[in-house]
Length: 127
Image (spheres, rainbow, N blue to C red):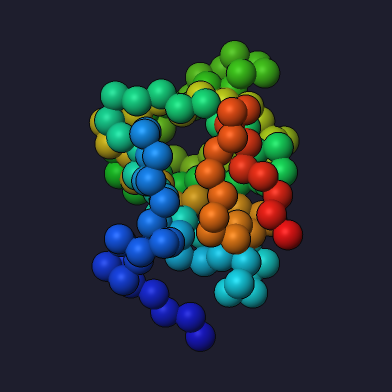
């Protein structure tokens, strides 16, 4: 059984920070679950471009408001507590936070914990 508490992750090397977001990584490849799970904060008033070319991601909003824009289709979807979206087709997208967003994010294949977005918004696939 794996049990972790947010306060044990904050401020460690599993607490990854960028200009517009902060990802607290609960489950990683080394945990052997077959997926990764993060508690992610998206800063209020920010826009981030993401493209998970090497991963699929499911996201569940537990706090805040914002929107996700599917760059391929141009569709914009509201995000609020209780919203789930899944990037099942490696969708290029903009994530905009009207207020601070708190998201539970699940990745497959699992993250190793050291990924950050490259110049194309992509997490590299780390073996």
